[in-house]
Image (tube, rainbow, N blue to C red; front, top):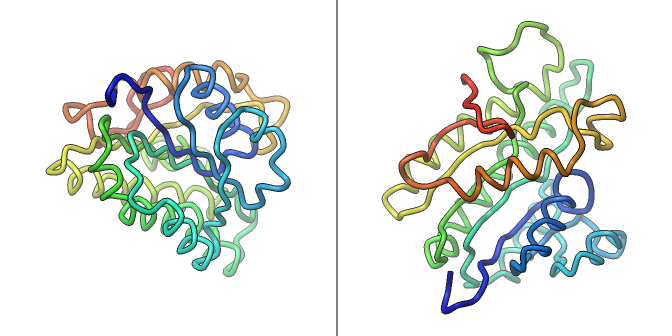
Amino acid sequence: MKENLMPNILITGANRGIGLEFARHYTSEGWDVIATARDPGEAGDLSATGARVLALDLADPASVDAFVAEIGDTPIDVLLSNAGVMGPLAPDRDGWIETLAVNAVAPTLLALRLKPNLKAGTLKKAIATTSRMGSIADNDSGGFYAYRSSKAALNAAWKSLAIEFKADGIAVAVVHPGWVQTDMGGPNAMIDTKTSIAGLAKIVDDLDLATTGRFWDYSGDEIAW
């Protein structure tokens, strides 16, 4: 921790679901939370957590540029890259490309742009929310072409980040939150957001350079790529 101050964490895509529960968890723990939403004016639940809410639309390069400029040289202890989309269920060229852009390309480029901020932080950790559906080894049911491929691409890109960032003391991981009862997961999902975040927060706590570059699920089990 920095001079007896609590750490800070930047959470993208925090206006609902997993991201919102992350914001609630870390504000309740006393962390300084910077959280993003595409439209902060429509993120009342997020604002109610006490987090500092900033605008960020990963699908809009101008929004990303403005966000990075607003962050400036602020040190970041933990980057939690959570923003993402489900994408089209049936193969659709434009929707597929957009899903890849939002779920894989944009989060990776943002992490690269925020590398100096992470390097200036104390904890030096970057974590991306991915999905077991991005595991090629685990795919035994097919379908979901856009979503699966976007998460597989995210996993591959963040594995490269882990290798490159290690020299600067920054630990990197990708995490599967489980099948969670959110707008994306639906009401029949297996676990609630609190259960998922409790497990993921432990992974964040435990992540270090000895475990960098791995793919975990919320229960702490490692997932095959």
